[in-house]
Every structure is written in C-alpha cells, then in structure tokens.
Image (cartoon, rainbow, N blue to C red; front, side, top):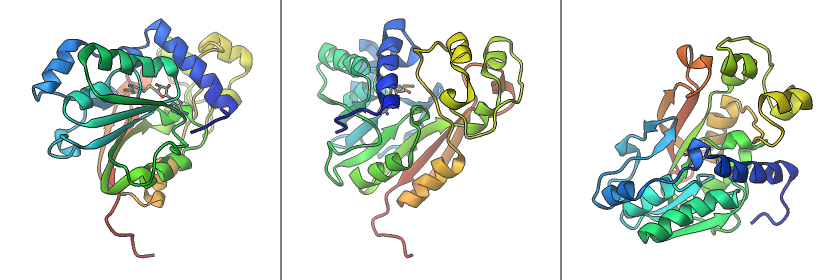
Length: 268
Ligand SMILES: C[S@@+](CC[C@H](N)C(=O)[O-])C[C@H]1O[C@@H](n2cnc3c(N)ncnc32)[C@H](O)[C@@H]1O
C-alpha cells in the first residue's frame, strides 16, 4: 500500500473526508432496508449517475464472488454487493468514506473488508485474487490512470470482470462557473484539463473552494485505450448525462464500460 501519499492523493484524502462531513450524495450510506432487500435478492448499484448497472453486467450469482470496490467508499455499493452474497473488499483513499462502509457493515452485520489506499497501487492484494472489480466514477481524482488499469488487470482472475465508470472528458472544456451556476456553456479550456493547471488559485477558491477535491480530465485513449492496453476485452458500454450543470441537455457526462480479463493472452 502507498506508504507516502503524493500531494494530490493527500489533498484529495482530506477533501473527501470533508465531503463526508458536508453530506455529499456519494458519501451517504444506504439504509438498512436496502441491505434487507439485497439479502432477499432484490438489489441494484450505480456506476454512473443514478443509472442502475444492468444485471447482466454481473455474474449470474454473487454468492462467493470476490469483489473489489475500487475507490468506491461511502457505504453504498460495497455493502449492497456484500448483502447480495459477494465477498467484498472496499479500497478507498478517504478514511471517512471507508468509515461509512464500516458503519453499514457493523449496523447490518455484513462481512466486509475495508482498505485505505490509492487506486493506483493495489500492492495490498496478490495477483488474481478478485473475480470482479467495481470502479465507479473516481479516476477523475487521479492525475494518471494507466496504473489503475494495470493493477485491476493484475488482481483479477482470468475471466474476471471490470465494471468502470468515468467522466466524458469533453465536460471539462466548459467554464465550470458559468455551466454550473448560470446554465451557460462557454468553451474555455483545452484538454487535458486539471483544476490545478487551468484555474488560478483565486478562481479555484471562488468556484470550488481550495479544499474541494481536485479533478483531472482523462481522454478516451486513457480510459478505453488504457483498458485495452492493459489487456482487457470490452464487452459493453453505456453513457448517461451529468447530474449537474448545463451540459446534461447536450451530451453525455458519464461513460461506463464492462470488460473482462481474457483466459489466455492475446496474440501480439
Ligand atoms: C464520487 S466518490 C465514489 C464513491 C461512490 N460510492 C460512488 O458511487 O461513486 C469518489 C471516491 O474516490 C475516492 N478517491 C479519490 N482519489 C482516490 C485515490 N487516489 N485512490 C482511491 N480512492 C480515491 C474518494 O475518497 C471517494 O470516496
């Protein structure tokens, strides 16, 4: 596991801890009724926006399936998948986000492992120890995502499935203040975008707050090409509008892929 956090991961750790305190939607744990229903066989989880993942993106049964919920804390998907029968490990960079998973696990008596760490370094896990990696929209908080796909490939068993959600990078070309607060779409930023390089500290403080999580755009070459380069085979794709801001009427804000690690290596 990462012993020394890089400055971005350190910043985003405190930032996401604060998001828990302020009640960000993606930090609010599911209630006991959701867990009871999942135990009884009725469940769904979201990967992008509020869109339930199609059931056929999962194995036919989760009983005994080893699942890694990657950068997916908050007491949401991990506990639901555990209640549905999976053996779940949640890795996240925020202690407070992991505490939300523990809260649900303790409240509803679920077996669930939490690991504090960086999505780019899955050194806490051996090779080929998971059947499914569930990775919702969180690589937007990492400057580099090639290690994420490489590590996902390594920890998955042959035939194992990666479900990944990520941002449409085109969202980042717009002036965020105008888009989110005035409903205007003003093209402003050349990609690749980062809050750190494209906004002055003054503007970042005014629009997001200097304490807010820092975001990075990633091209489709990094997202889709990155999965393919790691060795994954992509079998399904979805897109959904962003939940906030003026782009939702014009373009998808989120993409999701289902991919798997082939049993045999591809011919060169
Ligand atoms: C939008 S939340 C995702 C969790 C949520 N349950 C969901 O459904 O999307 C983003 C998560 O990514 C985590 N995160 C940010 N940077 C990370 C990193 N470098 N490694 C691991 N987790 C990270 C945050 O702590 C936060 O819990």
